[in-house]
Image 1 (spheres, rainbow over the protein chains, first blue to last red):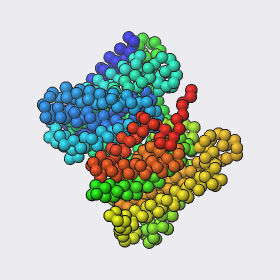
Image 2: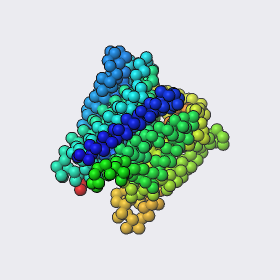
Image 3: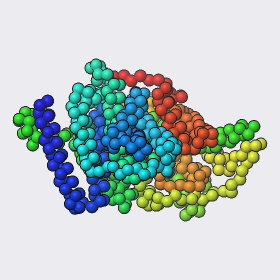
Image 4: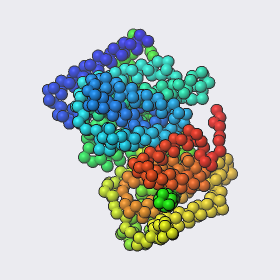
Length: 315
Length: 295
């Protein structure tokens, strides 16, 4: 446990150093506003892909409804900041809590399903959430919610991302996280070992949904307007691509996946067809030649360099 | 009386829409029955079918029936090709890998077609004059008659193939137990390939009929009907052919009633709500039997 704390500290120092460099580049106007926006989107995408990885990768419950939870978080937080003038952070957390609560309500019955059925059911739930929002006049319906304060800055996005990584990493390494991994490996065996599978599946789903809600809030405050079409299931597929590319069950992988997808999307913004064709071929080829994704179950902290900081003890 | 009239009219609309869902759902259910794969790309195969129908009507100036047949044959071959290239190498891979591949294939079909035929919707040519048949106070138009007729013929043909021919017998055997069927001398790969061919051909027919019915096709038209046809297949009991037919019709009728009496924006939500309710309360579907999972 002690060595883990040490790694956390190193990662934190590294994270802050990275932040200072990037923030320096932004204040020094070396990065123009396009790349600045993309850095914020990258942080949001990392939160989403890591939280989806908790559900899909670590717990093995194939969910395709992430955009729906993101939508809940986005709408709850924009209503709170725009109409009730709550502080930004509180509104974001409230959005996360709302999404998490809904994830809990939905997860309880749905997680009895498995595999492909769960995939389609969650996809359907995401769409139901979106269509319901579209029919609520209070939040602007299909036209969208306007005049949102532009609160999301790189600092907010970056530190909330760090917090997400820290919490999810520690969750995965805790007893609860181990239980989730056991469920992924073999649900029946896990149950036979005395793990309350429903409890842990719902727990992972709720936490994942909650972080998706926070990310949704950040996303919404990044632009001046949001509308329900930003949260279709195509969006969920996007996060799925990140997670699958990086590796189902690796936080490092999800970060790398989010990085690759965000910048490929930004680079090919003018050729959307090519972008999607590349993703499609990538998914197919990955499944053929490297179904575990780029990183598989490996984390960056597993590499040799880090074992030096752990006092030479092999993990 | 006015309410009754509207109700019956919505039922007619629902059945014509439901017939198309049923055609797509049949392909889903056959493929699921035989290799336990939710072919996410099935909706996009239906889109390709609609485009092939469109091009054979506008460019080759064929009438509706030859175009339908051409579209079914070409799309059937496409389905077999997809199976051969994308799914066969993964026959023994985990289910989730195959599911992700299917999502990949779906994207690939959507966006390559978008690249070749442009993302703007195209107007499907009117294949015949819009004649409305009056039955008392109710109206059935020519397109709906065409949909009923073609769906009926295809379903009879499919039932004949599956129940009465040697290939159908082999299909049923492979879907019941692939390994034992192979031991009995059935070439499972060939049968799986044929199943993909037939399923895709049915989806293509659905695509051409939708083009005729709604007059508009676009490269992303397959996503929603594909998902709804899956709902229909689950509703009827996945893997069961009559289930897919009945499930498709029920779904079409429910959708028509929801858009007629509640609000058309809730149409898609209704389909997914049905899916979730079915999965929670009777996951094996209307016609399915309950099976228990063994360790």
